[in-house]
Image (tube, rainbow, N blue to C red; front, side):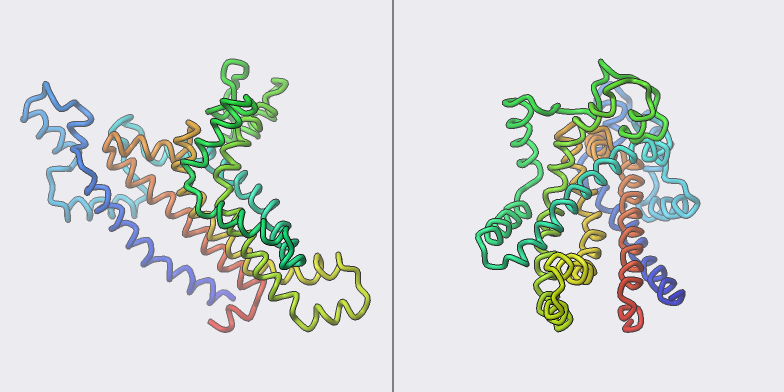
Length: 337
């Protein structure tokens, strides 16, 4: 088991190296000069522009900039934001709890709805429920998040007034110093009545929008996996023994069908974090996604590079954890590899 885990960890190293190179190059393909965006395009002499570029290291050859960037990363230095002059790592850690809270809520919604929906569709294969669920899954998988988010805002927030349009909590009614950065936990720890309910109220719609894509994937994967398991001999033997349908489906079939579903849930983390960029922008959610979008407009190279690397690191580590968990659930996987 230890050798398997070590091998999986070693295989992530080329991924990190490729990410560093792609991130560095892709950001510099974005049109615009970060120095001119920072100080203004007019009213500054060429000498002062050259001075700013020298201070930021942008006067060096690209290969030298890349080596300096890699050297700083190896020492845990993700740079300093050009816009705020704050360390990128500190800004990321300040904003990441908001993104993590949104992503966790979205995944929770996807799992709670998607797994039972897919299991029921497999049990009732060919029924109207099965066809409706599969059609809804395809629609949810194909729907652009920005369009879906704006549509739900117009419907639930503007027309019906059921949910807030933006933010994590009503700052006019409730204000308290953050303790953990997770609004639900901080609201529960505060002594302000109604703060937790208001935080849940703000979280519900963006979490549902972000969770639509993984919900569709989880529902389809659960259905597909359940259909395979329900045709196994041990399921027929369990039915022949007179076990109740609930025990056959819930205890025997669903438990074994969850192996590929767990993998899909883990791999959906990347889709959640990428989808969070659009969701946070639409709902003005103060998280990492919104911060990265703002950094693009400001041509903030260090913030973009550091933010993308940190998010990518989280995705890679979660994928690694899922891979290891998958081998624990099914020992044949690690022996086969």
